Length: 335
Image (cartoon, rainbow, N blue to C red; front, side):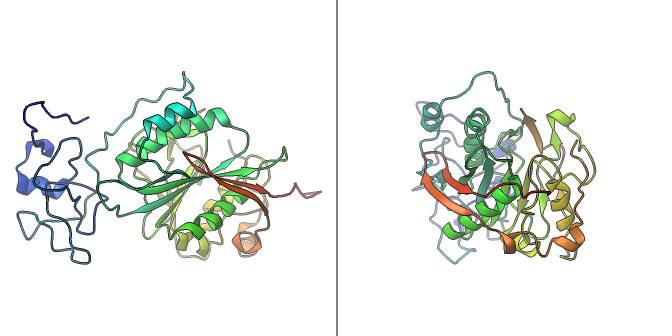
């Protein structure tokens, strides 16, 4: 945490660099000029996201207010990120505690950086079924995690009604459809409720060209992939990628199988391979998938977003997330 002395605020620069050089290394998600606008010439260390104090002019990327005309304004990390995190599941945080910890999160789990215009908008989609303990741990860690990355984001919880067999992939399809009604999201993060990221350098943004597997190192797998084609846990896709591969399969009930199908979809006839995130940054804490028996190469065009059927029962804005409750039916007989 950056702190100012009581007498006189001190401007901090990364790695002790002078102003002209430090401006190269600043914020990943900022305003239209690539800089955070801070009113006046006072750069408070608790809010300092860029060295430039002039208000950005919409549509004029070159009007930066920085000391040099040749500075680069496309950055890779927010100064607020800290890298490796200490994750503990010993104490279950209450909803009240999480709300108090995140005063800038709006109703429905929506967050927009208060001091800059975020460059990326990410929807976090969590398939859910009676896993309150895991949910509280995830919300406790994920909100500050995303805020330090200075993303504009909303968390969606897609909840399957009843006690029927869980269908994660179908719930995520529903989440994507509902989320895109709210906003043109830049990135869709498909997130398991029982995974918490351990490093906030693991940016929750999409690759422009490839679907991205975010959870390439999970503690229960000893921080290795359980098998080469594993695409489960957390994945990031642009809406274009998601629709191009017809979303996720709707026909996998219970645990296992759909991740292999999804990995195959990222490569079958859609000209995109999935990208593995760096192992050092993409580790997760968690509370052997069987091989898929589906012939994805033949079924992906007919099983997915274009065959999605469900009944929307409710859509409610909670303080920390948007809850979407749906009836997705039951496992077909002899499936």
